[in-house]
Length: 478
Image (cartoon, rainbow, N blue to C red; front, top):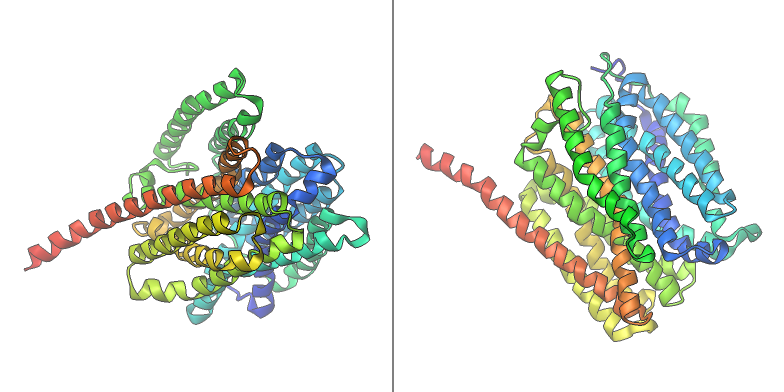
């Protein structure tokens, strides 16, 4: 139960959604600023991967922790703490004098984002009812497209405008005044809510998850550049015993009714397992796509940051339109049908993008890329909207928080690992094709297309398994 059900009102809703946009916009802005960071801090391609990946991993590791702290200490309080940490980390990112300082600040920024995000959906869920609740959730789901457009265009303009000679640093400094405004008004307009009975925090599971993700992230990011020394191979092998320890810890805590980070009994549900498949295949590729495309357009095609940002406008617009209509389509058709539709549209868009890079090559512009990226964005939104609905299909109300935490944590972990894993594929393509970016990005796009085909086949198989029990029930009724 929650101690407060006061409505946040319009001002409170705007503040919460602004808080939601901060981490989303920052991801887009960072991608636009990659080339400028390369020249300013002399960053390598691997270090660029880490700038994106460390943020995502910190976000993933702290997400479940942020949710539990919000339940126990108050969601508005944790929301404000998160905004404060995010704002301070953004300031430190902008002030970074070398790549090491920037990477450290990005970790703190990811942790701040993880404190912000769980409080928003939970606050909307417990304070709003009926049509107000439905409208707020639709805005929550569709705001990713808006954040993407604002991040790409605004970030590109900020970097290119070079205000006060600060260049890419303005892409981080812009967060600071926004955070200050949200902090100044949140106590007045955002209601405080919390659980009446505090829930325990699985500190052991959280630490083990962080170590597992680091053992996967650093070898994937550094391996190609360091030629796979034995230390990185040992880190990869260490994932197996660490995962076993995580499983043992989770089983022990579940027997003690101590709320493990990832409850084993929920992993027995087919819907959760398929949600995990979607998270690992789709979201890692999505973040890898954004990283590889940004690097290709700026470093490979020589686009200015504002031109690179404008190249994603079509994707952001179609994503927003698709996300807005997706709930109605899912209500009319089955979730698996919409997921398959989204995958089909995205696969067509990826194939069109391959053709575009092959035909136009280094002469590509925002206009030549728009048709293919527009298809990709429309398909992406349908997939994202299907993700939680499929993953949460068999979940009982008492397990909703734990199941949502599993899916969100895996989603963010995949988003964090994507640039490291698929950035390595792009770099491999560049080495094999002597720095030819169009050919290198097409290698990555071919891999992405193959993974989306695999996900579509897995969806068809899952759909048949779900329909089989229904058919038996209908036959018995006859």
